[in-house]
Image 1 (cartoon, rainbow, N blue to C red):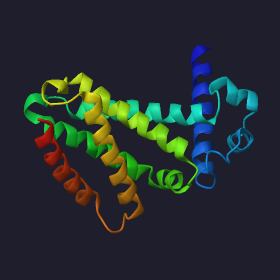
Image 2: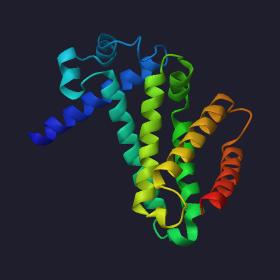
Image 3: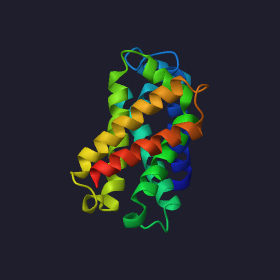
Image 4: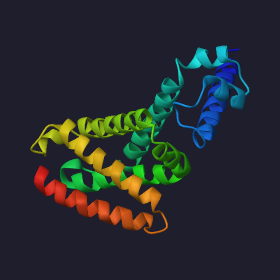
Amino acid sequence: MNNKNDLRIMKTKKSIRSAFGKLLKDYSIQELTINQICNEAGISRITFYNHYQDKFDLFYNILIDEKEKLVSMFLEKANGLTLTINLHKSIMLFIELVVDECIKYRELILSVIHHDDNATIQYIAKDVLEKAFNEFGEKYHIEKFIKMPVAIACAYITGGVISLMHYFLSNINQYSREDILKYCEKMINISLQNFL
């Protein structure tokens, strides 16, 4: 019975998240209502509130799940990298994964970015990405290699990556994924010279 309930919960959450993503293409989060999400997902408001406190909690949970996937993918791909020797490679691998996820969700990200009143969503996204970089920094104890607190270095990298992704996604026909990664690598090289 538990598996059936778990499967039903997973299906309901997937439906809610899918509806939310679809609606964010046309509405800012401030304009979007719980009723719209529920109607699109084919669920009741009670069902929605059984899973999420509000639409911001829904968005936050989506991003936290994506962050967990990102960190997990990084750890899998970084297996065998020795951070003391490959700090640059490790950071670039993480950024490459972020770039790939941004490309994957390009339409949704652009929709969120282009709604002027979606500052709350953009703040939540920045916060979650910064937490991902912090987890990376703490796991590998990068404070041993840099001349500043990890949180400050992570905030700096996060800000740069978010700005670069915004520019890249808005001008995707102008630059390739490889171009963006090449420019990112140059900026990381310059930053690391100052951090180390």
